[in-house]
Image (cartoon, rainbow, N blue to C red; front, side):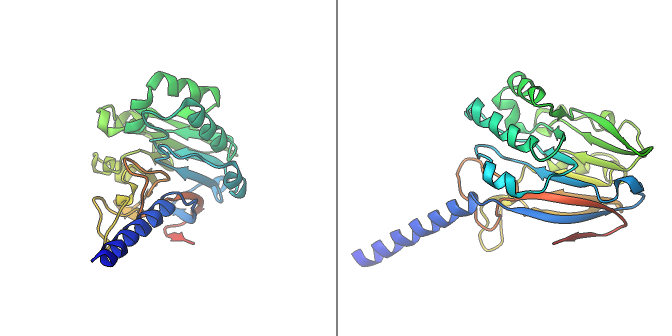
Length: 259
């Protein structure tokens, strides 16, 4: 009886250690997104996307291994209540090393950390908040629009204001993937980047409280990526939904491939 109990205890401890290890891995997935009508000057543009950092720390050594990109997108939950300011600032500093144009959308936990303090910190490092607005990037006379919205959980999301009636190729950032159900968003944007769900975080036999992250084609033209995210919430464990960040290369066309 004692041997059986000890065996069960050892098994539980080993599983917990494995889930803790899973939750603290550094992973970067490389994908190519083909966008119809992407202007030639933007063909080959690279994006780094990360969401749901929460309490994790971005290692300088790991950041050093990643490619420098044209754009860096932070998809919300950069932090959460209780995280020390110096840790958040160091994470922002490391992300800014990956590219000169850095954009941020608010997640539900970011608001809990302190809106004024976080906005001030982002401004210090030149990070642009996409708070129900859009920005046009011009290259060799051609344009690409980047838009983003505040988090759904705080009822501040304004899709109409963010879209701004643009008919240019559009990259759209939102923390919560449920924005896809808002009006004609799937028919307006070419690439939608979201996080929030953590891919279920702990999945048993392939099942989780939310869908596992990945690519989808929505509304005929919209390529949607829901990321598993980088950090964890509540418990520092992952199983079946490993942490991930993304480097995405934009190409002219109509397919999505991951490698």
